[in-house]
Image 1 (cartoon, one colour):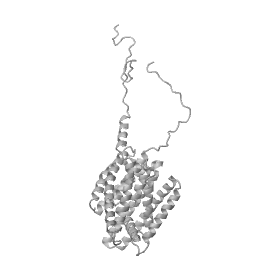
Image 2 (cartoon, one colour):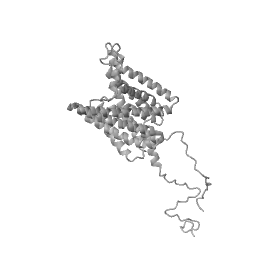
Image 3 (cartoon, rainbow, N blue to C red):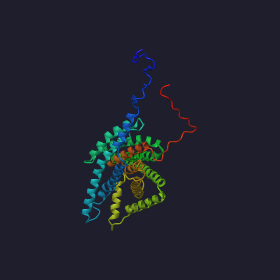
Image 4 (cartoon, helix red, strand yellow):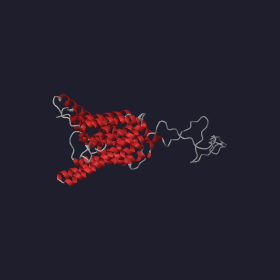
Amino acid sequence: MHPASPTAPGDTTVGAGSPAVHGPGQPTKQPKRPGAPEADRRWLARRVSATPAEVLLVGFWGLAATILGRGLATALPGSTAGIGPLIVGVEQLGSFSSQFLVIMGVATCLRLLFATLDCRSYLFHPVAIISSAAALPIVMFASSRHLAPAWLMALMGISAALALVSAVPALRVPKSRAAGLVLMTVTCGSIVSATGRIIALYASHQAHAGLFGLARLVATLGLALDAISVMLIGTWFARRVRFGWVWIAAIAGVAAFVAWLGVRDDEASAWPLVVARALAALTAHPDPFIGSGVRYFVETAAICLAAVTLWLEWSTGVGAALCFALLARVSGDVPLCSLMLMLAALSAVRASLQAPKNDVPPEPSGRRAPLEVMPVTR
């Protein structure tokens, strides 16, 4: 019989479902790995996503925009005479930091969105994409002109929805649970405080004293939630660093001193007036049924904690998420604070997706079965 005949002895018939057998000198065609597209997508997401250094840069300019743009820039004019160049310089620095924060924050927010595409929450994907597409143009539009209160309330609602949805996957992972808990508390405080401002605005138009009292009561609840979020982050910080409670005591001392300057009535010196006006511009309105000293203490402690938590666990993004949450807090209707809340939400989700460096795969229990090498052909 001819050797090339398909019925020659020694030939093996290969079925449709059986693997092909090649000779010793023939190249073997490797099957395509089913996980290759998934690996390529994750590699692309890591390349496009924001680096920790970029997140640190946004956090730094967030602190600068909060202190200079929202605080000192509104407190210095009219405080004393002979400081015209200082007022102009602080105003220019505040404007630059605010505009730079908007540009860098929007770009970083989009890159963090790419980094969170691996999140397994089915509700997170549509809410994150729609919220980013709707809120970021409003934030960029608000950087050049004032927005109507309706647009500000819509911006607060969009950012709050993203934060609430992002808190769920962050709470499921132990290493990002602190970020999820703080994110949930800050978002609830922002919603409550915005509700109080809406009631106060309606009461001022209608000249209704009873409704204004209700607005102050709602604002008191918002301040309580704000203080709880600061306490949670303070506890997290004290447990993460060496001599953490000593650092917390030092921060509390600085906040108490600044709050004392803010409530001090001293007409001979201009700095207490500047501190009081800056803290009044940073705190939320309407005024709650709590003294100004407590509000100023919470505000100063939050800024100090935001400055120190930014540098903790920056590789995973937990510290950055807490820093952004502290900068946003109960002022979600402010465009920059709304942007900070979105950055905190996306940073918390990314922190829940990244594995810690000291995680080692657990060894399976029991005796391992011996590795058996099976021949290709029998």
